[in-house]
Picture (cartoon, one colour):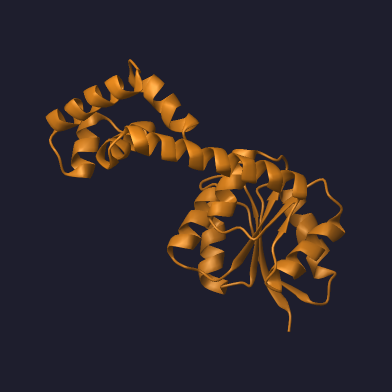
Length: 212
């Protein structure tokens, strides 16, 4: 039985090359080639492929957003991330969202073929150097979150995350079903606890501690 795949990359030359690469293999069937995140999701919903080969940098919706929506809808399709550069933050997020493999674009084409076959068989495939950096980043993120939880209350953590998401006080109040005045009181307490003076510093704290 063929391994049914969907290909997603916003560069036409790369997408065409991927299609030719897999078309030349007897055990693969290319169901769709997609140039945007939105197009990719439509193809996944329609075809329910075994494997999605996904570029992280996609227009309309990024690869991470595609992974997030697939996770929320509990789609069984396994995802192999194809990336031009190893950004540890993006890779850590991709792994948290369920990516089963990561391949760098400058690797030999045979590596990608092997990766997809192993992922289809239920295994995982990650470049060891990239994986070690990702695991280190995840460990730092976990430690930062635990540190923040010791200083801030669960409600204060929610507000910090909302500020980091660029929400204003009125929007935070609506989201958390509290008054705008209560949001201001919480922010005052948060600033004092963390020793920050403004929203920008608070956002930096949230990023450093892995709250976003």
